[in-house]
Length: 156
Image (tube, rainbow, N blue to C red):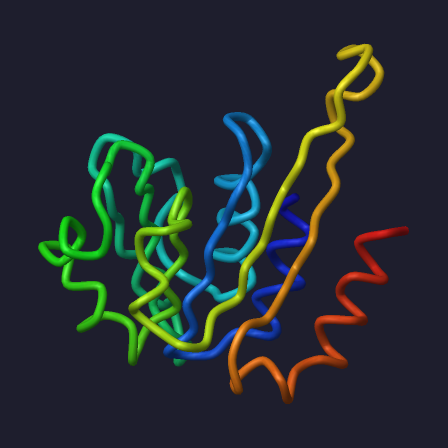
């Protein structure tokens, strides 16, 4: 998942909104850690479950990473307004775990990553994941080739 995050980071630019969906333990935070490495941001990327959001400033010229965990937030965007994500979005990459139905109004353009864990004999399948990456909106229409290549690499 970290490697996938580093690959996705190569497609991201300031203003991008990334939604991560998957059950507990699917690898959302691990993927975000890889995004942080790929973007070259400061600080250890850890789950922001109890603080809701963490900002990781860039080490160089790239965008900051704003990592949000919306798991404990029940409402929609209005409950998240206190986080000022709409202010952070233009100059940052905003990644929201558990953001489905909560932050889509922030941008018509977003990258949606869905992670599913394989079920069965846990000792055999614990590290097996199925990942779909889907770009929504005009921003991602031009990146279809990059997303297709990313999906092909993930499938290997």
